[in-house]
Image (tube, rainbow over all chains, first blue to last red; front, side):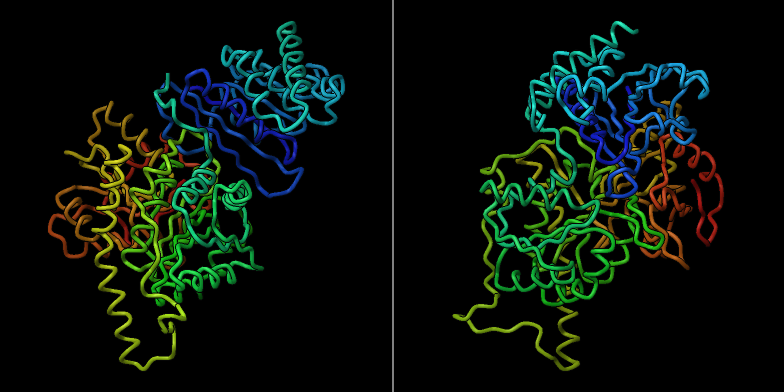
Length: 179
Length: 385
């Protein structure tokens, strides 16, 4: 079973991104379970979206203790509390304008950075970064495919579908180049 | 492929909303509260699209929402509502009223920690604290079960004339998005025909509910409620079997998972059952004779079936995701009472596991089995994490 955590702040779209990623896995024939937990129903508080992917129905209903991959919407959230759930094998994709070396002090982690805000601006998306982040994230995973991911975004994005798809594809290509 | 080509990816809360749509209620009074709100939002959306024909009422509080449910139900209508935690606690007075007035309301409660301190976490104390209000209580493990149970609950509520509360855990079920089979309207119509109670407030009939009564009549009302409560176990069995014949998914008051020859049986309710299934499989692979007894129907508690199931089992571990101050876990308390005087009763351990929503993973459950199955139980509550 593959276990993934998406970490963000309320209002950033981490929960939506979790649902979209789960839909992409589901579209490729996997069983999925995704759930979000949040401390307060208001913008700015930490939100965690957990995704499990398996070849058989997912039955366990508990937190992910050791994620195989993590997508972090805000680098300032990467502290000891959340890093408990990863190890040195976990690929962590971080949305940040900073370089990779800004995260060296955290320890020995496999961190890939993506500048979601810059990509969102490039595609006239304002502050909406989740499609770009999903593109970069999918680039670090063997599944789901980018075509499936973009297909889900096309179905589910509430507005600016083409810009969302373009941002996803752009971030995917950029991250592929960086890996 | 996952073999669930017809399944939609739905959260537990949205699955409930689809169950409500399929049950064709007449009136839905509802007030929002985290983490129930997606039920209200989806019902509102489906109603705006014309997929739900019910009259939707959004009064100023849960107290008023339940008041409206009772009034609407007593006109003979099919009524649904949903709430959570503080909202359920605010309804408390009316919960007694609803069962006393024999209102066939169906409600979904999302189990969430009651304040203080403030929290949004999965914990079943909110609904367990309503155990004496005269509502039938079902606990659901999965979004699929929540959808299926809403539809079955209307049949049970309307036959027994007792309201039904279906509870599912915050986040682990309410916000868990996973494949859910949404049955067709014609299938549900076959299972659950339209309802119009013949005992109702109706100017053509002339009847009143809830008028002041003398002691003898009040006493009689509770004897009648008791008699009806005693029919509920069989109604839940029949509804679960008939639903299974139509959908392939059967349900009962209890469910047994790998309990044949089990020397340790884990007893629990709600979302933790799924985690226990994984733990049981892992322990069975290591040769540990362990199984799970899932309590789906908590009120009325299936006492006879519990006694039959646990007689001769050497050890049972009750995992309670709730804490009743001064006693301990509510399910543990209920099990002790149910098994009282039973020959060959198991050593019954009550473990406060996951209170306040703290994480309980399969590995932790394995540790608990290994730590407690050889021990003698203690009387007081045992806190574990």
